[in-house]
Length: 332
Image (cartoon, rainbow, N blue to C red; front, side, top):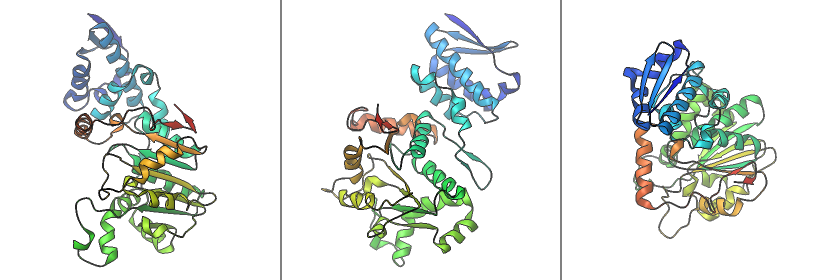
């Protein structure tokens, strides 16, 4: 057995321990250690290797707590899951990278190293593809980057689009006119806009045409200059649709494509344009490709376990190969 004494500021102890000590209990379970609150710090007792890893996580949590951010189980489980190399990263780099502020003044920032790489790729490339499971912040962070670019004057307009593909339901069965049938598919994009800018500002900018939310089919025949364009749910594009969209990119524009290849709703026999795009575009300069994993899930911890269970049952593609993550145009 080994003991490690971790020095943490006294005023952060309650934040690190969490509600009814749930954070510390989770950390003890993750590494099979015992953590005691002493007058001179937190004492970690357990297997030497596991005690050292738990101590490193505690130091990271202290870095987060010092910033004033509330420590959650998501922080604990994410930091616990990092590899040895990843654990060497300074989490303060994540917390200092504020993408934008919501209408309520809440900072929007990357919460995982994967999200940080994604944000950096968007900043440094004209086209970025982010693919991975639900709950990894692909769309939300892309929207935040779009709003920030618009507010700074880097682009003149924001264009948000999705393919209107039914997930087990038929558009024709829904009531109302065409717009009423399409709106449910675009609702997540509206929701993110409302959180970032507020409903009034969104409505004004929609009326002025500087923000556009439309189905992918409406992009045909257009050239989009000075725009920040987000294509969401791109796994449901056909190969022809994806090629059409990619050739819409104009001068001084920024494009982000997001999708989850485990949730393709295309009719049988049609191949995903997203799958083809990441294979074809992986070595092109000024295109960044970021693949998220279940470690990047920032929703309820149960979502991460659900994603993991599906991955085990569906025999996922190898983590390295045609999907290799690119950073700044360099394959890893």
